[in-house]
Structure formats: structure tokens, C-alpha cells
Amino acid sequence: MATLFIADLHLQTEEPAITAGFLRFLRGEARNADALYILGDLFEAWIGDDDPEPLHREIAKEIKELVNSGVPCSFIHGNRDFLLGKRFARDCGMTLLAEEKVLNLYGRDVLIMHGDTLCTDDAGYQAFRAKVHQPWLQTLFLALPLFIRRRIAAKMRDGSKTANRQKSMEIMDVNPQAVVNVMEKHQVQWLIHGHTHRPAIHTLTANGQPASRVVLGAWHEEGSMVKVTTDSVDLIAFPF
Image (cartoon, rainbow, N blue to C red; front, side, top):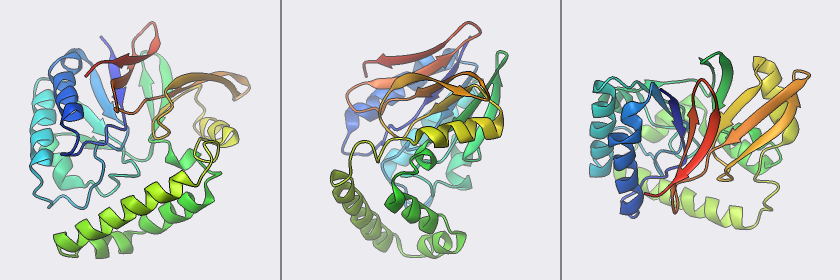
């Protein structure tokens, strides 16, 4: 048996191949897992649990069927779907986790997170993140009519794409010291995260010992998962 991790699917109606690949994953590989953890950016955008988008209902139904089959599913918010709430989680049957969570997996303590908070060199993004995570602002946004929320979300996505084109790849990657700091904060030698779309297994030193950081890939041209078993921690790419 194994515990599976995925992130950065960025599901949207404009990308049906990714949705189809995710549904095959839920009906196939995931059915044999001990548990599934989704580490953020499951959706390209999220403007509220009351959005009647048919894709959301389809995904909720499929995740619920996975959970009903005996595979628990947990979710950590990403920077694209940080407004995903309790209502949608309930429809999926999945558990919402804090932005940093330590799991004990087959004798290993593993820290899981989305990963955007590790990109501390991107001061502009971190300032934006701090602003949109204010509860009062989220409450205000979610009280707006859906059509206004859609316009705001579209404008924000366009602005993010423009800003990212002007940033260096180094700025948008994790800060090495931020990685060490969070691993030492939680006293772990393993970290799994997404966000950067740069799949790899990195070795480093944390807590005065060898440590590993496993980065999930985005689901652009193929799927990406981390598979943790008693014997190994594997980063696996697979076709949709």
C-alpha cells in the first residue's frame, strides 16, 4: 500500500484532457492507496463554493466516490484555490488541512504544504498573499455577486501572468533558507510540496542531518504524483 500526493492540476473547463487524466487517476491508481493528499491548486481559480460551474460538481462527485471506496482524501489550499471552503470539501468528503501539516508515514515524519510560502524572494507575491488571506477581505469578496467575482478573478489571473513574465525564475523558486527554517520548525527530514512546477527530489541538511525536499510537478502535459511506501519515496510522472 502507499500514500499518494498530487498538486497543481489547475483544473478548468478549457483543459478537458487534464480533467480526464485526473478522473482516470481517481478511478485507477488512487483506489489502491492508503490515502490521497491534494496539496493545492486543484483548480485554476476558485471564486466561492456557490459557483455552479459543472466541472466543480463533477470533480466533487468523483472525489466523494474515491472516499466512499475507503480512501480518505485531504486538501491543503493553494494560491489559486485558497477560497475553497467547507461546503465544497463536504461535497467531496475530503478533509481541509492547515497550510503546514506533519504526517507520520510508515515511520517517517513528513511535512506537507503547497509551497508558495517558501518563495520568500518574491516580495511582491508575498505582499499580495498577505492581503488576500485577510478574513475580512475574503468575506467581502465572497459576498459579491458571482459575475463580479468572475471579473475580479479573471483580472487577477491576467495580472499574475503579466507579473510572472517579468520575474526571474530564481525569484519564483523557493528560498533555500526558508526551506531549512520550516523543516527545522517542524523537526522533520522530509518535505513534500508543489507550487513551483519544478518536479525534483532535492537533498539538503536540516536539523543537522541529511534531509529531502520532494517537489511535485504540475499537470500540464502529464500527471505527477509522489508515492510514499514503507520502502521508498518516489516522484512519478505518468501520461494522462
